[in-house]
Amino acid sequence: GAVVSQHPSRVICKSGTSVKIECRSLDFQATTMFWYRQFPKQSLMLMATSNEGSKATYEQGVEKDKFLINHASLTLSTLTVTSAHPEDSSFYICSARQGGLYEQYFGPGTRLTVT
Amino acid sequence: EDQVTQSPEALRLQEGESSSLNCSYTVSGLRGLFWYRQDPGKGPEFLFTLYSAGEEKEKERLKATLTKKESFLHITAPKPEDSATYLCAVQAGETSGSRLTFGEGTQLTVNP
Image (cartoon, rainbow over all chains, first blue to last red):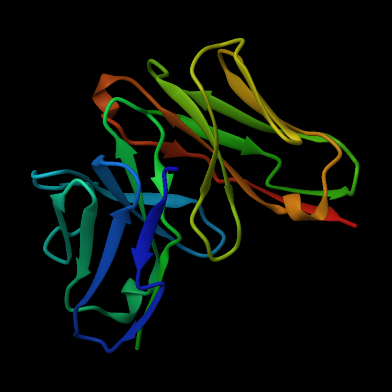
């Protein structure tokens, strides 16, 4: 149980284009989903928290117009990186939490490379 | 501000050599302390949740314990497949919402 998937696992895009990453909870309803970014040999950095049907809450320093988050259903959240630049290249990981429980279950991550 | 410090940063063990990883935390109103395992290029895998001092949980060769200031992840007779980065995270009180604060992790290598 508690499986979270992400798609795609890897994506390469050109500078200036947008890319969408999907995060799905496969066997539970995720009232809250989280998006993290991880740089090599560093821990996870929380970017934003989203509750189903509500606007996402972004962490300080994260540009909400650049990283668009949509949590339209209890099983799906999307992160769209708009007008991507090489400095946006990173490992993006989502997690999901079922209402009333504290544990977050993580997806396998998406490696984004912007050329 | 919530803080989580993990030690050591890296640990090399021989297969069968038991050891412990440490996670020290400073939070306002602990809701839960979590241990995750992360393999290279993958998302963290959930291991344990601990809620209150004195609590212990076990899974195969791993045992997690919690005090009011720190948590230990004990690894008994490790195998090479236990090699990974182990992350500790805390969820604090109402003002922190449901966010987790992560430590920097301990990179464990188990040599055959």
